[in-house]
Amino acid sequence: MANKGSNFDTTVLIKGGRVVDPSQGLDLAGADVLIVDGKVAKVGAGVAVHPAAKGARVIDAAGLVVTPGLIDMHTHLRDPGFEYKEDIVSGTRAAAHGGFTTICSMPNTNPVPDNQAIVRYIRQKAAAAGYCNVYPIGAVSKGSKGEEMAEIGDMVLEGAVAFSDDGLPVWNSELMRQALTYAKPFGAPIISHSEDKSLAEGGQMHEGYWSMVLGLRGIPAAAEEVMIARDLILAELTGGHIHVAHVSTRGSVDLIRRAKERAKRVAETAAAGGHGRPFRVTAECTPNHVTLTDKAVYDSKYDTNTKVNPPLRTGDDVAALKEALADGTIDVIASDHAPHHFDEKDVEYSYAPNGLSCIEVSLALAITALVEPGVLTLPQLVDRMTTAPARVLGLKGKGSLAPGSDGDVTVLDPKARVKVDLSTWYSKGKNAPYQGFELVGQAIHTVLGGRLVMEDGVLRA
Image (cartoon, rainbow, N blue to C red; front, top):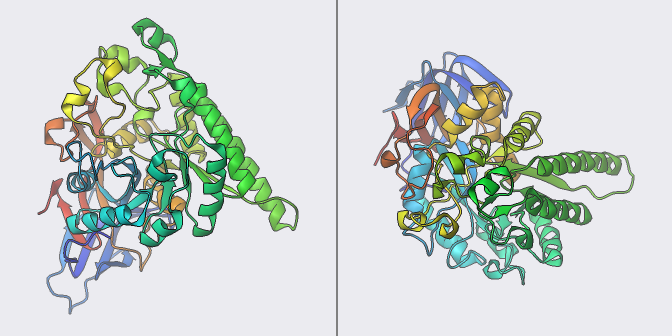
């Protein structure tokens, strides 16, 4: 999808790295990855370039880790309509700088991608930019108003891979039921922004001890959990695929875990000829919600860059998210990259918009919070950021280094020490509470369809 003139290097050989590919169960030390004509040709030790290959590009990956290209299935590009916050060019440059070769654009733009024309605009502009693949996520409802179903079938034909009214819940239960039913034959998940607006109304942060200390109106965990429970019930009713975005509470984890167990039992019963309609439940959480707690609002003295939706939760909730990532209850780590203009965040806490920019440090945040303390192994982390999102969205040729797969590769240093400097980010959005943070892990090279788009941490023109 991202071609920038379709100028892939004819042959790319990534030599001597630790190759981690969860799609094949590979974890090979000192291995090579050969990409020919934009596709993975061979993985293994001592791979050689064909003598007839001219101008082969060789990347020395000794001491580094080579993985399928990172995939972020929850990115806000703000384009069309809010290009002053971010646009497709700046957002895809930021993604490539963070090691991502594929991202999915969320639909809270103006106009909303609720028809073929807007989906086509996003897809074509991203292809022209050429820094990473962009798969649009279309709106569930027209204008994301929650009143009338959008043109789901037409958008699938134009390249949309999932549907969501992200930023807003689909408040109408009958509409959500219809959307789950209609999207099922296309294999497209409905992504749930799980928020009961009546419970969350006016809330600024998680409802708990720190909201009381700071005098800010809180958002209870129940605001998320009530809507997740509804959507899980509707998924089973329809036999659809519900994907729960940005899970943040222990109660949500418990609901999703039970629903997955239920889905497994139903599938087994149906396969044995019994009653029951198979359904599918998947989920994601953000690196922000396993890195920070609601105390960050207090520690930062009301820094509006800590204001996100869902809000940062308690230490107990963070522990539950980590457990869920480890046992597979939560399938995917997704950034929820939400850039804003400086002026929008430079206001009193109650007036600031929700969201923080993070795609350029998502990998480092995840390694620091999850791999370094032993919550996940590195292969598990790679799975949650490559193979799993490709599987959830049905992205053929992505999330794998199997021969014939797209030549999308991330080469990273999982032990690199990085001090966050927002001024160096490619994203227009510098709204992140991570300035000066000492993190571990960094993408070094990003290869997109056999083309080196980032080399030694610097984007190529």
